[in-house]
Length: 490
Image 1 (cartoon, helix red, strand yellow):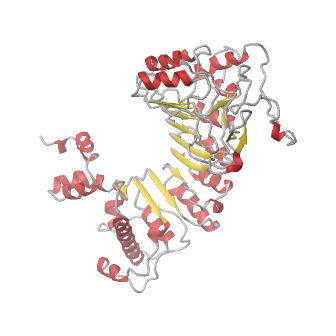
Image 2 (cartoon, helix red, strand yellow):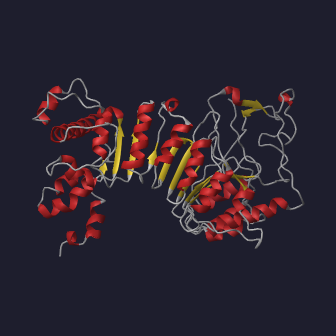
Image 3 (cartoon, rainbow, N blue to C red):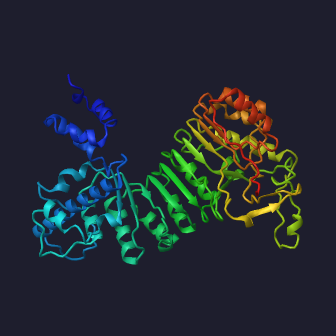
């Protein structure tokens, strides 16, 4: 019996074959062709690395194929009514798109890929024996819409560099509503974010009537956040960077009501100017039932694998100094005249409240039993601007870290860290720019409790965690560690 007679095994083998080798396989015989053609067209363009010349050639050939199919369909069925109307239609049995379009699951399209280059007339006449000279050249929107009509199994769509006109936005809403209502949404600004407003993103999110599964956005404002929470029942992955309108309530609503959620990311590393980073308030995150005094069950407890978000709102009476050496709650000497510069320090309502909250936060985290990545901190400091450096009491000039977390988890055994013993799949932990209290005993415990741990980033090796960093380096070289240190101005 051939492995091709077992569909699951054939799919597994095909997943390891490069696009080039797949083109060889489909030429072997009819059986191999039937088996491997769907895998060859699964991802367009292929994810394998191509040279710039090869990538450009593939894009142009794909555009010409879509154009030829589009013009042929125009001759068979002339357009009627509103050309912007989105509707699925049948194509001729010999149509290129009707044959291969259903196999396309992942599609990446750049607007320039669909624009007719001025230098391709020779290529066009070679590829397309019937250039349809009498028909006007179709626009990129017409070609894209035509392509969508023959991709009923599309799961992931990545589009970028479209203009932000009202006509285009109406077009995208129609696409989201009628053509690909359940695909991923991934908007990459690439310097074009001035064309897309919070209201635009909210409108497109709202247009997906069957619910979005994977959402990746550079910015999430108030309107788009409100629209997003309505898709929690289908949401599987959420990755956002700048989140001025994403509140703790929004975040908890998604986490508590998303049964398919595996990725929840609101933190990104890398230098960033004036980031707006949302955070979970401890009280919201705990979500305790006032009647039973127990934590309410959340829908993603058995599915969540990657959690990257700040958890704040925990009084920390043990943290009396800022990271750069000043007393918390008092103005820094060089800024005494600046109005509103004094930090407001969160106080306990009763002795021990901070530790009580931490215990409940650990309990909530412990319920995510499939968690692989726990990112409570991150590093997006802007090192390139000398104006961000301030002089500390020692006389040195260091980067002013306004986003440093003080009202956070200690990550110490005394505060209840051992409650996270249930996270046996944990591989990555990030506590960068957090007022943690991780000592040697804590890293020893982590090594025992989390057998798959590969990365522990953010230990304050210039403060109280130098010994832990040293022990980890000497005794666990297999665990990578990137400590967090004061950034001195040289």
